[in-house]
Image (cartoon, rainbow, N blue to C red; front, top):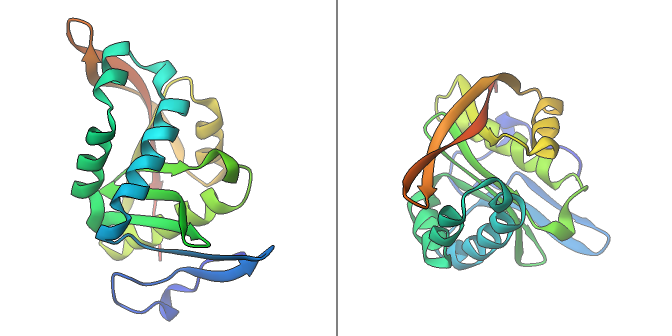
Length: 185
């Protein structure tokens, strides 16, 4: 289980399975998320966001990012969400809206494996199949590990942008690196 299934071999359905296999006794697959996955995905998103992103954000934004926030966000993003499932548990997910890859989060216990690269590749394939020729993502300034990962995966740094998030006295700007990649299937 080291590479995505060739695009020509993928079934046209949205529930196409990208990877199947067994590794070290695990059953693993990357697939489209289902409504039944929302609570697992939201819990993973909540935990990993607070672990990896919160220290770059104002306290008010961290407070705003409650479990309910993540459930609502994942409900809205469900049609464009992929999950990496190991032995029935969601250990990573990605989601996008239009040409922007907005989420790719991996459980701490799975980092350093090939999960993130396989999931990112599967996301790129799906985005391209949906008609995206150039994808974009925003990586919070300071998250060097994520930026290095995206660059290794062929994403190009295109400068900084500001995004508004909740601050103590209203919205405040937080800097993000804008990154892009030309997609091909």
